Length: 231
Ligand code: HEM
Image 1 (cartoon, helix red, strand yellow):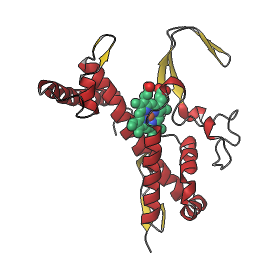
Image 2: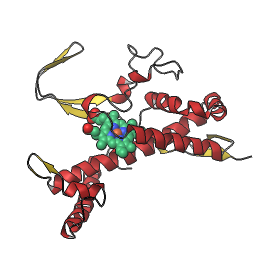
Image 3: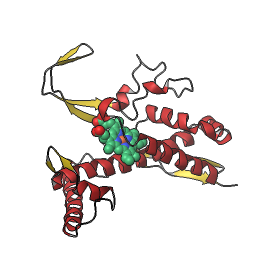
Image 4: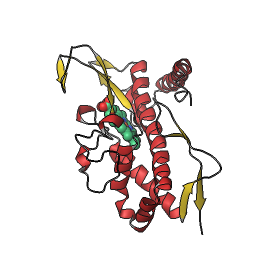
């Protein structure tokens, strides 16, 4: 993955390719006068904001957030969860015996190893964060994976524990931008893990090949060879 290689040039090229493809589809739909009730994308073509129809580049941006926000995080999360259970046999055994505990376990594993590294903000007014005064107009990164291991909030931050308060977990963000896809993501991940556990009697890291972590801004694994058993 280009992001894994930290190749900004290639990343920008991919973004342009994505934008051009989506833009072509939107223009074609606009010309065909697709009904706003046909689907969510068509409805955006009829959406108004600030007293005018949304511009094509605004719709492309919304669709990029929807698709990349979902596809990238879910793909990374499935790898992280499978890798974690492969490397933590006691937890895998426990969840096979008690699949009802999957929803809590999934959020706790993804607190430890987040599928989304960071998001950006720009300050609109002066603010003090911790002991740090920050002027208006500054660009900030919110690093979710660091916040989710904050030792002031999480005792033994690097340990999987069953007794944490789920409200402390920033996996899906907080505030006005909190992830609107969280209920869908939680369902998708629960079903994926239920099916993985149901379809196998055991899985573990493959001996022959090493796993490769993805590098920021991507998260999870670039490659995760596992050995699956069905006996
Ligand atoms: C494991 C999966 C996911 C994780 C970890 C995740 C995490 C997040 C986080 C932390 C934010 C806040 C971003 C910010 O504050 O700037 C966010 C926003 C968002 N997420 Fe998710 N997300 C996931 C899946 C999804 C899915 C499945 C969808 C769509 C169906 C989705 C759609 C969005 C959208 C549209 C926003 C922007 C909300 C806004 O800015 O108001 N996400 N997500």
